[in-house]
Amino acid sequence: MSFRKYKVAMFGSYYRGFYLLNELLHGDISNQVTVVGVASDNPQASNIAADKRVWQYPHTPYEERMVTELAMENGIATFMGSVNTQPFYDIIDMWKPDICVMATFGQRIKSRLINTPPLGFYNMHPCIDDSWPSQYVGGNPFQALIRDGKRYCTIAFHAVDESFDTGPLLGMSKNIAFPKETSVTDMHKISSVAAAQLASGAMQKIFASHQTSK
Image (cartoon, rainbow, N blue to C red; front, side):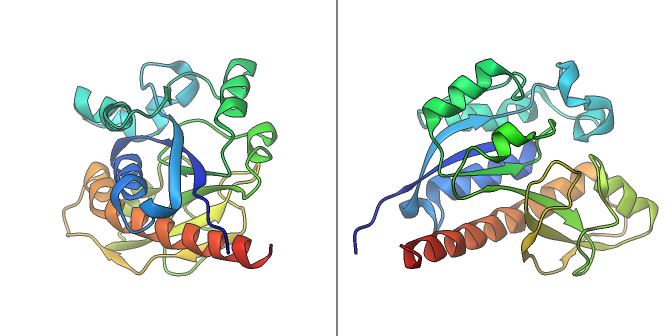
């Protein structure tokens, strides 16, 4: 049976984006994929609602650019503007991804992009136990978990639709424990490696299903 690498476009930033990109480049899935482009957050831009997302919390200049820097170190095209515009539609049409995956990305994805990759557009979202759709929807789920006194979370890997975090569930991580005194930024960092590994496993299942359906 012939084999080809699948083309991946990643939409991500901060630690979840960094570790997912690293997994795509160097992890178990790396021999199956080529990363054709990376769209990342610009925290200074109004279109990502930084005051409602992780960027409202203390962070360093490097943490703002850590994903694009890793992409550029590996010769991958990057984009930091609005993705729901014709200029980006032209770019993603040139990238021609087979699959798109989000990992901490501050823009809502609309139907034009959802329908672009033939193998689907996916996201990772923190939730609790195996509940999906999650009660912790929206741009700041870790703060909601802290508010409710939760000492752990799970990460859902799900298809993207035009609502907030309601697309079909494809995979769920094991429980990820948090220390008693944990901040939102701590929770992002602690859960990011598990999230990247979850995405890798889910994508490998998608590729295997695609191969057997040929």
